[in-house]
Image (tube, rainbow, N blue to C red; front, side, top):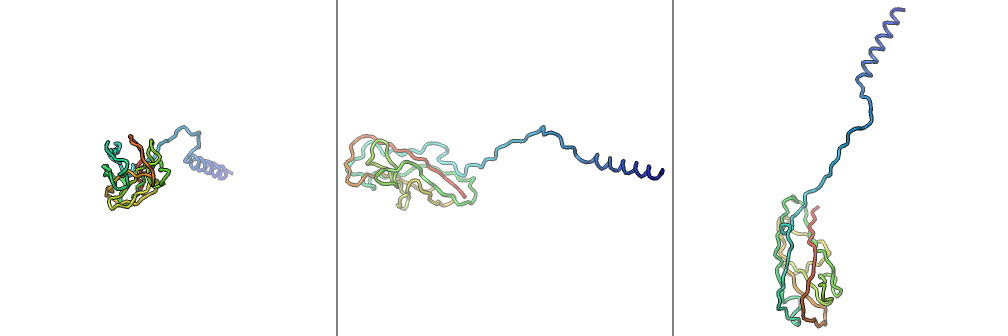
Length: 166
């Protein structure tokens, strides 16, 4: 009988030791928060506005998609993109007479076409692969709707350059 009590006491002590090592689940009293972000793949023009000024002397009858071509002066810093595939898009409102060129605010028959250095158009609202580590040379040129007679006066157009890497 005494052996049974000793055995029971030993079992109870063993159980207490085993249970004492288990964590007790209590109500949560801690919370961890954060937000993960990706570094921007590229910094466009040092964060500054890119502006192309065609000047004050564009002759309406000479606007033909060739005359008055202006290089777009901008910088592209893609250090954070790694060696990933990079693509560019110029996003903006399309001209009603040609969906591949930017609309001007003041004149529905006038648009701004974007060209690459080699000459092919850079259609707006379309992704274009660009060479990693290079800043593509771009140009802008005024274009008009076929057969239109432009009225003299100022014009503006706006767009957003987007860079994406994969």
